[in-house]
Image 1 (cartoon, rainbow, N blue to C red):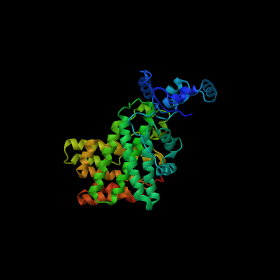
Image 2 (cartoon, helix red, strand yellow):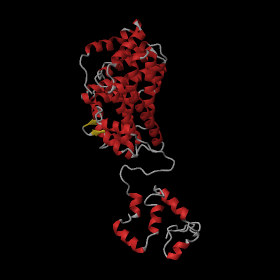
Image 3 (cartoon, rainbow, N blue to C red):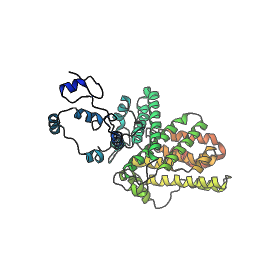
Image 4 (cartoon, rainbow, N blue to C red):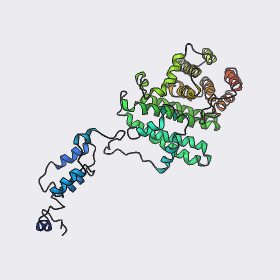
Length: 402
């Protein structure tokens, strides 16, 4: 005999002397604290329709005492303290109004290929494993790993390049949005996210640089404007969060930064690659503020050359990418105006890029950039460009980074 669902009592259930499957509502039974219990459940991060919520309670409430005793042996109820404190590692608790990232079958294809991206699977530096482990609490890292993987696949599968480029751009945009949202509440000493934040900024910087270099075959002014956008993006991301020296020595993050830190420690005196640029600043007609901005950029570029001299080939790219993320806003403002002094500094940077020309994301863009700048500036600045132009002729091989 089925319940007739009448209120306040089911006649069929009363006649059969059994518990009704449609019990009295909280309001009808005078249970004024029901809303409070549901709110408390939500605050702990559990949905009221989860197995630990009201649906499960309603199901057990309709069972007889004997049934409940049997279920106690078959499926013991977890201790409430465990439900509250002992969560699955890497699993973030849902929050009201916060949308979760959705991953499509295409994204899973990218994840399958991510380990093949050069630099993602170095010994002791398993970027993809870290991204998967932090997929819930730092989804921006997973999105950027997939975005950079899609960019890499455009070089392997040119026929799919347009579609892959669109996916890459969408994932990168989502990663930036997620990162900005996450850092609104993060603190510099939030240990659990220091590593994913550091990896995100590093991969994003290299990704933005690769996107910029792809524009070298377009008109010169658009190419330089893309560099300005790249430098500004990288500076903004670094400004949001830059780990201090202490976290750099963390056991997880240290394998990623140790080569560069050790190379920096081995530099005893600055090199001379950028000496012609420093000499040029003495005779420049730039304003003092612009001169100082260019001098700082030259010092940063020389530091990148010095670090590269003390790095193994496999880690050379770290110093090359670091220059693009550390430039100050004052220099970028000079570059935005396409001032010759700023373009000359960019041409010298082209040598660092050219030394990594066998890296799939850079290719021959460094050489193109140097020649394009030389053509744009003309004969008046030819002497200032003599070193990078001569260096292009001297370089025969190249570091092999995939």
